[in-house]
View: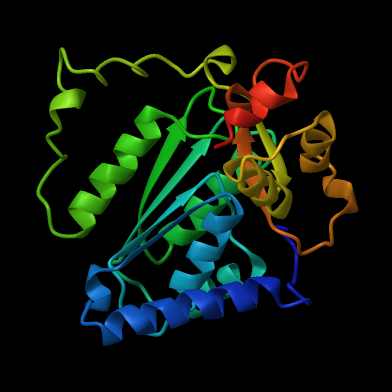
Length: 240
């Protein structure tokens, strides 16, 4: 995807959809200067390309575990310097989108934008409380707030204090699978309707090699499915 020229127009279509949503919100009275785009993985790549290819002024962009697409890189090269803030977060143990993609993206963006690059030791292709706090503080500041957010749970003695002060170890983060989004939604609908699930339903989630190239995927933590699939009914109940 890093070198993908988007000949099929998948990214371009996604960017057009994002720009259409921005226009809709603007018509409803939301100033574009109060809009922040954000995304994880492929969604982060689309968020960055959408921001960089947008003609108006936005409040900022938060890009997590992603990369700069070829069109986004071209847009960076063609644009002038901007004060718009961009947050880039990436785990050093990401085995799906290499950490070097995040580093390269942040380096390229810094030539034109105010970039904050959060390097998260030990994090795989996932998120963690430290990253979510970074995003919350970024949004707070991008929309005019001073300093960091003061959240009671983050203070000493709070529920979220110290949960990730140390490096994020691989054993602390659940493995993330990518499954077919349509299969996942169909399973959830089936369970919601009271239908019975089978081991074949779980197998269908992972049959991504049989999907069309542009078929959407969805991240699913191993902790959601459980450590094994011996009881598919119990595992699938966790999807709801």
